[in-house]
Image (cartoon, rainbow, N blue to C red; front, side, top):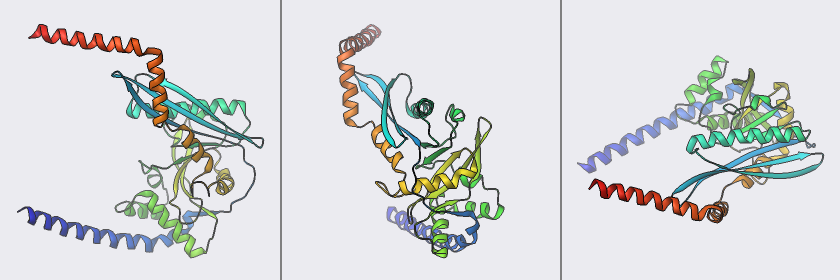
Length: 308
């Protein structure tokens, strides 16, 4: 009986995989019809003044008590000089998705502080624009790169009927970034494009504070998986900004802007960082936390004895 179930499952999976292969082949063949949805951008090596921000966070426990920590890294490149600042904050009463939202809001807060102190013309963020508090207060263009696409905002915002239908059909067997990869690589192959960056046509994917947010996919170098980007600012500047970022996206991580790579590394809450926080908790409140934990356990033990 069990063997029959396994055999039937294998046969069904084989059928489904064959269907996926056939549909994927159709999608690849049709990708060439949407060359008008691709924009080619030539890299230009020129100084660019920017602020890049990212954060890392974790929940740390000590003696049964929990504290969340957020580490925000800010990279400032202005006037030919670069500097990295880190800000660490312990947070109480936030965990999971709520902690992530708090971290995103903190990124904007520290970005606004940096923008008040330094004259720059671009803010780089890791993670979407939409959903951040006070992001509409930023008065320079914002390019937010989203590595983990959880919502298909781009495909659901396409206004060109034929392209929208193609994307919806492709989404049945592919994830959105892979569809963008197929389209961009097909364009690159057909037009003999070498090292130029490619982006998909920007569409309005939402609003913040009454301002349009544009979404598109960017492929800074050939063959790299495209990155979904949300942009807040004058849409006529998108090509110029991508053109300036492309030379910064070849190393240390291929196809990803180096400034965001740097702040990602600096902001990470690794084991050493966790150990430092536990040490601080031990030095500043170890006796108090230990006593509180003991009181809590004794109270519960007494309640148990009384009830029995």
